[in-house]
Image 1 (tube, rainbow, N blue to C red):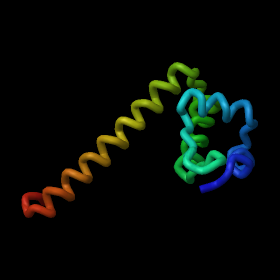
Image 2 (image 1 turned 180 degrees about the horizontal axis):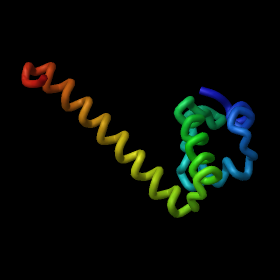
Image 3 (image 1 turned 135 degrees about the vertical axis):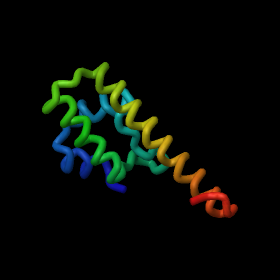
Length: 94
């Protein structure tokens, strides 16, 4: 996990932009510590957001839809992996 200062430096974002991205739930830092902490996944997501907005011209509404669909896809992949692991554990899977 990295702190906000390092996250901003590594993503080349300004604090105002990060605040918007967090408010929109595009980036979700860990808030269990006194200061927000960011993961490598947050760094990758920031890069994706930057590419979609600046290189592909996706507007904020489109970005919201794309990120939601990506999150759903990852959730489904995780659920499928868990189901397959459970089937293997019980001798009913591939």
